[in-house]
Image 1 (cartoon, rainbow over the protein chains, first blue to last red):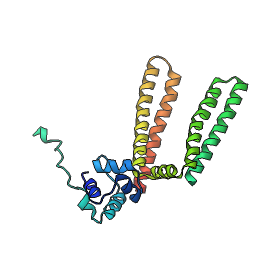
Image 2 (cartoon, rainbow over the protein chains, first blue to last red):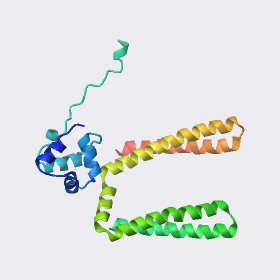
Image 3 (cartoon, chains in turn cyan, yellow):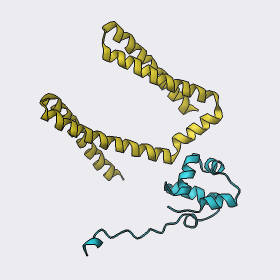
Image 4 (spheres, rainbow over the protein chains, first blue to last red):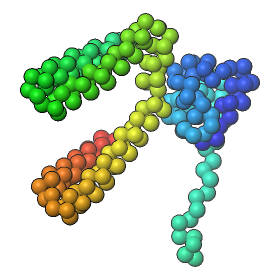
Length: 75
Length: 133
C-alpha cells in the first residue's frame, strides 16, 4: 500500500528509528511499511497517523487498482 | 526482561535434558539418543549465550523484546509456519507415493496415516477458527 510516511518523517526531521520507537515496532517494520512491502495493521496505521497528526486516509493510499477480469480473455 | 529470563531458563532446561540424554545414550550405546544428546545441548548453548548477553545489555534486550512483539515479525512467522506445513504435506505425499511404488508398504502406510491425520487436524482447526472469528 502506497503511503507518505517517508515524506512526513523527513518533514518532521524524524528518523526511522525514532518513529519505530514511538509506535513500538522494529525499524525493519517501518522500512517495510514505507516501501509498501508490508501493510500495517489498523492499530499500527492509526498510531503512525497519530504521530504526524493526520488521518489514516491522508497517509495511506487505499485506492485499489482495478484487477484484471479473470474472464476478460474469454470475451 | 521477564521474557528474556524465561527463555534463558527454558534453554538451560533443554541443555540439561540434552546432557542427560547424552549420558543415557552413551551408557545404552544408543546412537539416536546420543545424537539428540549432542544436538539439543549444542543448539541450546547458542541460545543460552545469546540470552546471557541480552541480560547484560539493556538496550539490546529492549530491542529484542520489541522485535518479539513486532506485528511484522509475527506476520512473517505465521507465513513461515503455514508454508512449512504445506511443504511438509507435499513432501510426505510424494514420499508415500514413492515408498509404496518401490515396495515399502509399511513405511508408506505409516506416512499415509500421518499425512491424513495432519489434514484432518487442519480441517478441524479451520472449522474451529471459522466459528470463532
